[in-house]
Image (cartoon, rainbow, N blue to C red; front, side, top):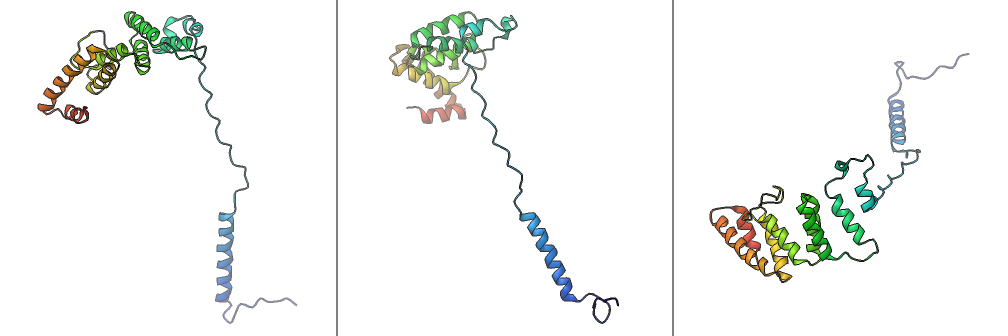
Length: 199
């Protein structure tokens, strides 16, 4: 004899069975959704290895023999690396002299990096050169546009040069102030902001 499933009087599934089925389905979905993924997490990416220090030998003997393969700034980086190979701080005077040489040969970006290095290490003349390059009133056709007309940088470098005892920087700083005051009085907001922070 076959067992018949009780489905109620009308042949339908009783309501409380439907509730139990829905509750089990929801519980199964929650379990599947909340179960922690058993896959192993991906390891964190490895850090980029530091760029190798470039030496003069590396710099001036490009792999393909093409001098154009030397990027802007590489000459300056190689020069500083060669001076600090023994672990001592490079001499700012030697860096300044090399910056002048590179600028004379037309390597403006390399010279700029060396001037900055020397100025940050206390060289007043290097700071004066950087101030001149950024000074809106300074005219030199050899200075690239990306260095010109930056009174904030001119103020910064002239101030550093003046603190280092460079008399010409004091004169240039005063001339820059007069220029900035004229610009501010004609409505230049950039000049007005600079005057607010001028010491």
